[in-house]
Amino acid sequence: MKKSHFIPHFLIIAFPYLIFECFRLGIFQDKSIGTPIEHFYVVSIVALFAMGIAIAVGIAGYRVRNIKIGFLSLSFISLAEMFSVHGLSTPEFLLNTNHLMGAAAQLSMLLATIWLWLSSLPTDHKFISVLSKFQRSLIPIWTLMLAVFSGTGWFFPHLVHFIPLTVQPINYFITFILLGLNGITMYRYYQSYRFSRFPLQIAIVYSSGWISISQLIMIGGQPWNISWWIYHYLLLASMIVMLAGLIKQYGVKGNLAAGVRALFTNDPFERVTGSMSPSVKSLILATEKKDSYTAGHTFRVTMYALNLADELRLKPDQLRALAQGTLLHDVGKVEIPDSILNKPGKLTLGERKIIEEHPIVGYELCRELGIMKEELGIIRSHHEKWDGSGYPDQLSGKDIPMLARITAVADVYDALTSDRAYRKGWEHGKAIEFLIEQKEKHFDPVCVDAWINLCERNPEVYLYPTKKINEQTTSELISTF
Image 1 (cartoon, rainbow, N blue to C red):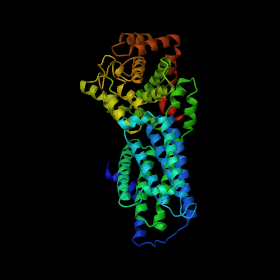
Image 2 (image 1 turned 90 degrees about the vertical axis):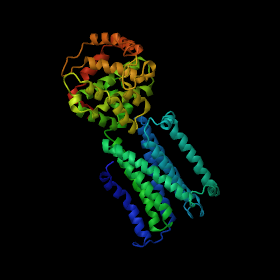
Image 3 (image 1 turned 180 degrees about the vertical axis):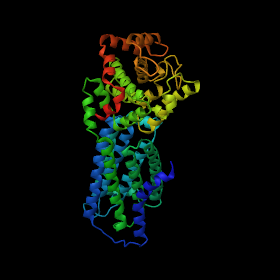
Image 4 (image 1 turned 180 degrees about the horizontal axis):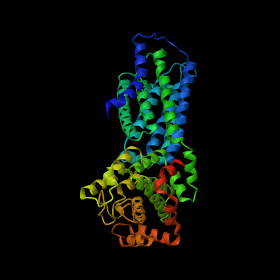
């Protein structure tokens, strides 16, 4: 990252700490404001914001199949539950003076930081892959565990003495870990933000930074002084920033409602567009700017692939993964020079090698954006061949992910039947002959047979996408959903 790009953001993030130092050094008068009621209300507002964000992010994460969004939800669930305990344990409010308030505040930021850090890891990381298997149960199980812990601490506050989180040097060690993890999180999200400019990414950068500043103020400030209060309001600010980022990212044109509707429609085009998250839309539009053919091709391939997957009786979760993965399967072409991507004639050997890098480029891009393992398999492996002669990994047979094998049939079928500047598209029958000829060479024979049977039974499967999609108006089609 170029340091100059980040400096304005860094100054905004660091500004509250500068104010804190002005109080601590005596530049500003640091009075004591020991009002338990105000403390309870400020902390409760932060906790409510955090829980609201957690619920909204959790729903969005499940809808768009993005494990990183799920981790963000877990981060703010942790912050909400622990900070609620922090507020409820305010001395002389509901409980007498105790160690629960400080321990809960420390745990809220530590746990939130860990989940934010996990959300920044690539989705093909081994640990993330393991957690992805439990995506549906992670949120309820974690919420229940925190509730049990919180209840135990509330009813038996003396047990907190055995968790010396606020005692030196343990609190300094925790601070070191917290600052390190948040630093990594900020770096990774800012790197992604520089490419994609997604509002939620920069919101996470600010939120992670302000959690770090809050930690420094919490361990360095004098309780109940004005300077100590800064971190409470700073956490509230981080929640507001996250909420704003979430609204900008997912509150576009009823996206969530469109997604629910798409699950119950028979219209294949609505199924495709309804499955798109704003981030997927942005990537498709970025691809279209490079090559208008690619965008129309992407939509048709997705519609073909979904119909083929229906024929093969894939489960709903697999269909959702297939929809998102095929929409993104050619996104790596954004890095290919225009002179090669749009060359009308035959490619040289060197140009062909550059073209063949697009599955890896797309894979690397999407793994950093939180796209899940099944979708990544489509992006990386849709040019693999059944006999092992494909690219980039020379996989063969059933070593090729099933969803990538389905996409390969849909991808080649559309490439053959589409008009290009340098050739006329093939008729359906000629393309089918090619698929049959390439069974057990290029394609999984089961997928080819299923596609042929489906097309014979219902010609609309291959006629409808061409009639519906106008390659010149893909941007307009995307913007309507």
